[in-house]
Structure formats: C-alpha cells, structure tokens
Length: 440
Ligand SMILES: NC(=O)C1=CN([C@@H]2O[C@H](COP(=O)(O)OP(=O)(O)OC[C@H]3O[C@@H](n4cnc5c(N)ncnc54)[C@H](O)[C@@H]3O)[C@@H](O)[C@H]2O)C=CC1
Ligand SMILES: O=C(O)CCC(=O)C(=O)O
Image (cartoon, rainbow, N blue to C red):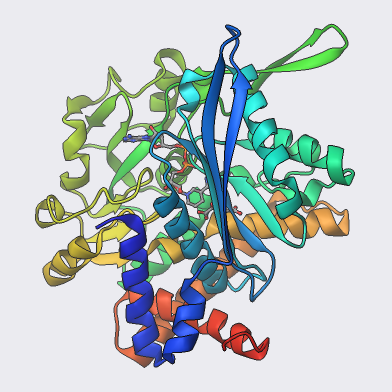
C-alpha cells in the first residue's frame, strides 16, 4: 500500500472511532496547499540539471505548519503528502502549537557536490520563500538534509524578508539552533521506549535491540573544519562523519543506557554481534571506513534480513513501508519503535498485532525531533538560549506526557497504540478546526 493510502486509511479508522461527521473528516484530510516547483541549477561541470521540489502544507488549525525537508531519489508527491499529514497528527500528539507540512526534492544528495547542494537549496527557497514563514510554515531537516541545509534556507529567506532565524529549525547552533536538536529524535525515541518498557515491567538495560540506518555514507552532516578562502569562511563537511541522524543517536543513547545493540545496518550493509556491539568503536570504524561493513567485532549479515533478526526491540530508522506483508510474519521482535516515518504498512500492522507484537507508532515515537524544533523556535522568538539540560528535561516531560495521553485514548477507544495516537492527534486538530469555524 502506498504511503498516502496507508496514512489515509489510519486517519479514517481514527475518524470512525471518534465518530467525526463526514464533512469534518473530509476537511481534515484535504491538504491546505500543495506546492510543486522546478529547480534548475548549473552543475559544477557547467551543465544544467533540473530537480522537482515539493512542499505540502497539510493543516494549520493549531498553529503554523511544521515539518522537515527530505532530499532523496524516491521523494514523490504522494509520499510528501502522507508525510505532511503525519506531521499534523504528530504535532497534535506532542501537544505543541503547530500544524503539519513536509517538503522534499527528488535528488540523490550523495551524488551532488556541496556547491551543487547549496545552489539547489537556494533555488528551492527562492521558489517557496513567500509561502513559508515564522508564523506560516517552518521547515526543518529530514532524510538527506542537515543543519547546513537549514542555514542556506535561512540565509536565502532572509534576503527577501530580513534576518529571520525562526523560519527554520534544526539550524547550526551558531545561527540560533537549539542545543540538543541534533540528538532530539533519537533521544525522544529513547524516552518513548523507556515509557513503553517500564509499562511492561522492563527497562532498556538487558533488552536486545536491532537498529536500522545507523550511518549514512556520503552524507555531509557535521562541521569538521573551517578555512579562510578569499574573504569568506568555507565550511567543509566530512561525509565520513555522516551518521543517519535518528538511528545513530538512538543507538548511542540506548547503548549508554545498557541496552544490548545486537545488529545494525546502513547503506553499506548489516552486521551482528549476539554479545552486543560496542557502539563507540563502531562509530570510530565508520569514521575511518565510511560504513558499518567490515567492523572487526561483528559478523556480516544479509542487509535485507536486518528487520527479521532475533531481538527484543526493533527500531526502523530509514525509509517508509519497510515492514510489510512480505516480512511481517518473520519479525521476531516483541516491540517495534517507529523512529522512521510510516515504516510499517497497514497489512503488516494486522499481521504483527495477531502475533502480539507491540508497535509504538511514528507520530508518537519520533516526535522528539519536532518537539525540540518547537523549543528552538520558542528560543528564537524569545531571543534567549536554553542550556542542553533544560532542553533534554523538557523533552522527557513532553515524551512522558505524550505516552500517557496516547494510553488514555487506547483505554477510551479500546484500541492499539497506533489508533491511540491517531485518535489523540485527530481529535485535537478536529477540536481546533471546529472552534475556528472551519468545518463546513
Ligand atoms: N531527522 C529528524 O529529526 C527526523 C527524522 N525522522 C525520520 O527518521 C528517518 C531517518 O531520518 P534521518 O535520520 O534524519 O535521515 P538521515 O539522512 O540522517 O539518515 C538516513 C538513513 O537512512 C538510510 N537509508 C537511506 N536510503 C536508504 C535505502 N534505500 N535503504 C536503506 N537505508 C537507507 C541511510 O543509510 C541513513 O542511515 C526518516 O524516516 C525520517 O523521516 C522522523 C522524525 C524526525
Ligand atoms: O523538526 C521538525 O520540524 C520536523 C521533523 C520531521 O520532519 C518529522 O518529525 O518527521
């Protein structure tokens, strides 16, 4: 089932549980605005290249629309639509004052140079600058984008509207980014996992984890050096330092809490060590070799089988639809924490539910990223910077509260955690929609 069909199906099930009338249901489903732009840039070799960019603004009943921008070859309008809708429910589950949006450009970032990525980002921003804004729509990083991408958007947007740090979140700290945002989605997933395991009388320590997408070869994600060039600072990024943002932080934090990470994957392959992988030495290896492949203290396994490896907790942290009817029956984990967006197809949901697997759904499990984006936006608007402890403590409060709110809806509607989260999010947005008189 494609991402949009799957998301619509979950929304409609929730609308039915809530007893929404059909007009309201329809108005909640239809996106506010869908933007499609052609971005043509000169490549470094002088030829021209064109890329299609999207921004879908799904809903703004509860506040400015909010969501990441993805650079990936598989970006398509239906998926961006689904991801934008998921953001609407996610910000409502987190109970932060936002609606939902998502953007993307169909491109392979690892095939583009830093200058080409900068030109592409600036052209995309030129095409959408009058449709985003601090109180309208606030982008952030998603797959294939990073703080540097946000810095380029901020700079390009500011040429038209004056210096506006709050127009994007997930920025570099030097430009008003929040401490703790880089780790926030992984840290939020850790808090979510703790909340779920505690409820089942367990803790992170002692559980066996499998984590997908811990690194990304070819992704430029962290500043490693600055050098003067003419009169401009050229910031160089090291692709060898690039880790999948969500998977790498989840792995590091779970390892720190005494969780045993028995298998991990990235684009170079998958590795396993039944005794537990030493995550810090794995990351040293990745820095040197640009991937998990060949790590001395683990053995290689088939990358396609990572999701069905024997473990207690499975954390998908890459693309959508990876858990589907073809592999759901083979999954051995007792818990799935959806750090990625829509990793589980509805067919797989049904199979896994029959097998007794508990799934912590994306719109709650990965909401730590957008929650700290909200803290960043608040700090920018106030012109006041929080320390990292405050950010992490507040994140824990929001994630713990979110889990309780989801569970409450599960009790009220006698449903699983996915429907608990969907009914929670949809109900909050429906209430705001009716209060604003928009339902007709
Ligand atoms: N960055 C954030 O704050 C948030 C991200 N997410 C979701 O988490 C997931 C990962 O996002 P990020 O970590 O930000 O992206 P990233 O770009 O930092 O890392 C992506 C990871 O996916 C893997 N990957 C890419 N294409 C792949 C393919 N064809 N097959 C297997 N693996 C592949 C890469 O190797 C890499 O490890 C996405 O679903 C994203 O929407 C959700 C909430 C917030
Ligand atoms: O931080 C944000 O605003 C959005 C993060 C995002 O794209 C997501 O939660 O899927």
